[in-house]
Length: 431
Image 1 (cartoon, rainbow, N blue to C red):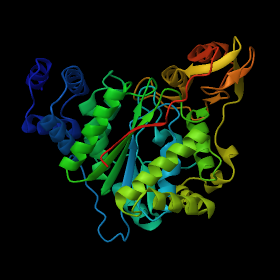
Image 2 (cartoon, rainbow, N blue to C red):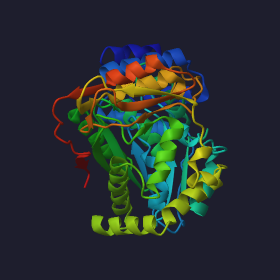
Image 3 (cartoon, rainbow, N blue to C red):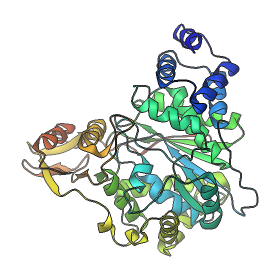
Image 4 (tube, one colour):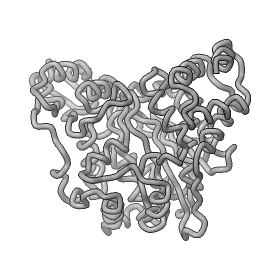
């Protein structure tokens, strides 16, 4: 390992055998965290070429079991977001797409840095299990048509260990590490098609369009190199998605989407991604047909029924689909008020994501627990008018929190004129 760390530090390339040996050591525990952390940092600083990235992805993929879906009777498709603040899309998207005729075996992660994790959000539902075994994951996919769970110990286990280590070693932003992490678990879940939602902006890991576009292209190319159909959509993450930040809050907002009642940006993005998934896996031939299927599943209630079946199958309380009050909620509310009149010109999503972590809603260390009840409700979004003293947001915490409210107030920018609206979808790749 010392030789590998030195070589990568000095801009050298790692061979497929070097990478395979490292990943075996990560998987069986023979390589300590401090050595892996050093190599992760060297990779973050020096990067990896295409062959190294493919080799790392392949080694992480083959560190455990790989599922297959022969005989399932419907096409399989998955989606992955690179992460953003308020991104609760998967919770509604997976059952909605499944209700349209696809099977959606979805492996998700916990919060990473300032971005939330779908796994943490779903665990806000009383009793909901994300720690399924590979056999349970496979059985539920076949029986229910949709499953959202964390990595089991035998599905890409190397990624599970490195994912937690990256979160606390300032190595989250490395593109080859992101590609290998995402693809190893997604390919292990066995879906024939994968859609990538690559977030772009101040609240995302990739902050510029160039970075996000490059990541999307690398994800699609690496997936295709390893034999899977793939597509990427670059979407905006300058301000938080929706009107809530926090695990329980976001789960409730996602379920509202399946009643057709979600915030406009969450509804729109869920529909765009759902349509792309249905076309990618062949359930629909083109977007108009996909949109019609999504409309039918929403209006008939089939999408919410599929979500209820998924929640019940994973031990969660299915009443949450009609009564979100069973989700935990912190008791103290502190208002965030505007200090002047004007228009909201920007909201610093990253600052609000880090605020949630400080409130206990995310992790500063990999062993930290998460408080599902704390959160931030956004009363005003970018482009909306405000007057001095009006509520911009509400802090939901375990105590009165004027200090956290002041942090949130500083995340809002207010100007004299409304900004020009920005598109939610920035770029589509891999058509």
